[in-house]
Image 1 (cartoon, helix red, strand yellow):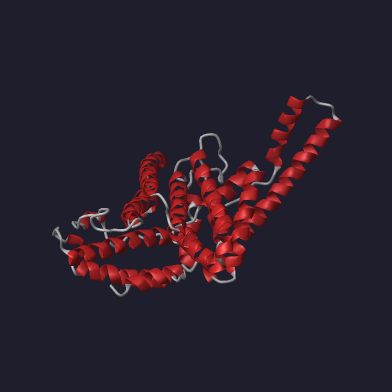
Image 2: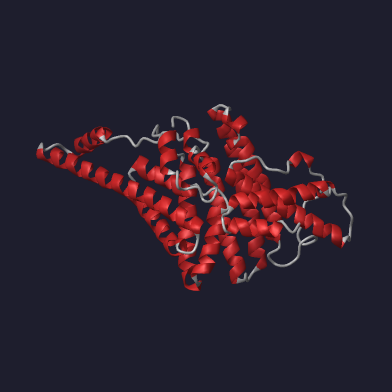
Length: 367
């Protein structure tokens, strides 16, 4: 089990290949020792310790597996060991988070199997959409359980509050990832997502930006660790989703949200290789969106000037603008172009995994 802590530290440093190797070794040791099939023994402190370690490995396995686009190493169907309970197995005001992480880990495994595995990708769009709705409901239920438990604790230390803030961002990131499998109802634009997806993505960015406002005075190192925990440990798709909506809807408010997010990464980018890659990639996407919105605004202004010169009424003017906006060049997002744009954004995963992250958009209907 000595491999477990280095695995956590490696993931903090986003050396995820090393984290995966170390976690794999820890998982094999736990399975070889039979910790996944322990018979329940009351008042057995040694067995309780083993169960805590096993379920921590399980949680990390699910988190890294989803982030790397791989199947988990410990399958649910082969586990007999009882889940952890609070406060019987874990004690302390914030120890319930460990129980919560096991539930989140189970959810992450289902997100991979039901939505993003090779088998899931062969399913019809409607089948994946129904699976996404079920998974979203489970995520919201876990989130509500966390909030109820949090309210029952009362005063929460600053460090624990940071962990809760990070977990809330992770919840919204997972919801974004899930909702992206539900096609939008009123748009055929390849970068347009359903309303729930866009709302979850926006909330994730807003929570991140709010955390920066609260933590900026505490020092860069705290903020760097927070980003590793909340943004890099799980697939952080909210930025790409808001970026897509910015392009699809020419939304200037979403553009401002992207800009604020990019600015929060700048200081930490100097102290972390992974955050530096994230910062460069997000900056590039933000600049693309900024140029596109500027061109869109100029095109709209030009159309309105032409409409005013021919003295049409306001409704006709709006219709003219809407019709002529179709003349704007399409924002092509083919797989090859995504690969090129993300070739340097592997977050420590390597080119293959970076391309796998880029393929998320191409899983959408009409993409």
